[in-house]
Image 1 (tube, rainbow over the protein chains, first blue to last red):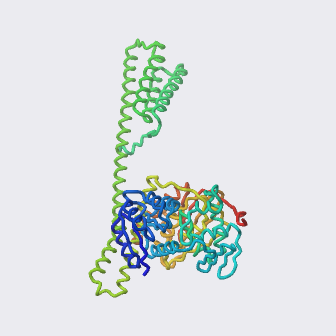
Image 2 (cartoon, rainbow over the protein chains, first blue to last red):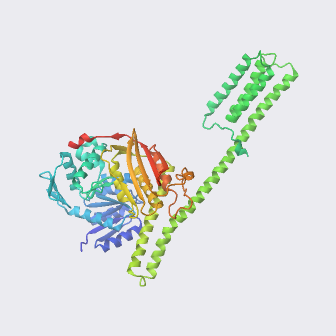
Length: 225
Length: 363
């Protein structure tokens, strides 16, 4: 029984009902709000472990709610958005949402994202070695091992994989990665990112054509898992 | 019949330009007749001027045409009818002819204008009929494509609700699976309709950025609902440069072309994707070894709601028209050909900047 509390902020009763049943059957405790205002009050009174926030609410834009929540709430917020709205998603991620899901979504995917987001809530930030599947990333020694064998990485490649590893399971937008690795002036130089993701995949993936670790999120960025 | 007259209508020319061109034409023709008056009688000149007004009437709006008619009548009177260089007319026959000229020029102008108006009405009517026809096709196609999955969902839910005890676990799973599939089908159709309406309204604007085509295609392949009965071949090419294109549009193009091939080729067919570049163009080839397309229908397949006769159920006739829309939105072209040894090949050509920045790899 994990009984972590999840707050759903969504105006659609059908979606709330579906989420309630799905989450409760996975042993989560569910709180519900149908407007942004109500959601913020509920989160303030009793901060949940995770918030599922619909971006298209009638009373207030999801982006505004996200900004307000992020002023004091530092646990996971997953954005729910309609399809084909990559600008919305990128802007939500840049404004501090932990992850996103587009409607319609499969519940298995939702549960995986929730588990990963809650795990990150609880992870200590000062770990020096991050292990993901068959990869071992040592942030102090700046080394990466795949199946216990050392992989030779260039300095930029290591910076990239350590940034990914620190945000395991989250989507990082192109702009965010470019800013973190190359600096503020490089946020539009996406070709740098494409080249390095390509070479990194060749070194860490079993099959770079069907990557299991660095996943392309169309129009948004990359997810490391 | 009016519709078949097809009087050339010069659209989109500003009224100022129409005034200028019609007045200048009358002046030039009058000058020409005046210079040739040793060979032309002043009555022949009147016919030439009348003909000029008729030509102007066929091209321009009513006001510039009436001005040309009045101007040409006055010019004819002043410069051609003896005594010249004044508006006085001595001869009764010439006076009568002047009024006749004036009358014919005006009638000519008004009649031509009326014919054009009638033609416009007929064209509007035809356009309206076509819209209604398209709307009906849309409704038929939509009601089929949307109602089939809705019926599946409602039917399966009813059966699960009412006969739960009698249904074996296996059959319950089958029904649940069908509900899932129907949901995907509905979602796909809604997405198609949204895309086509966004394309038509010009809401979708391409956002160009650098993309690795190998990654883009592999990502489409991973998302494509896997159909084990078809083999899709794509060989990543490490020598390809990065292309500056719209990612979403290009993904949709490839996804829809693959979906189309999967949908309309028989089981065990092989679908092949190739990417290359020629001068400043990104070229994507998607071919299959199916039956190909009837040669006389090839121009029609990209039309909205067009479906080849006798094709199997499913599909709204939107997929390929969306592909064309996304290709053209990136200033590209798409061609469909039959291969010599059977099967069809779609060739997408998108003008795109390219980037080779391999030197970065050692940083």
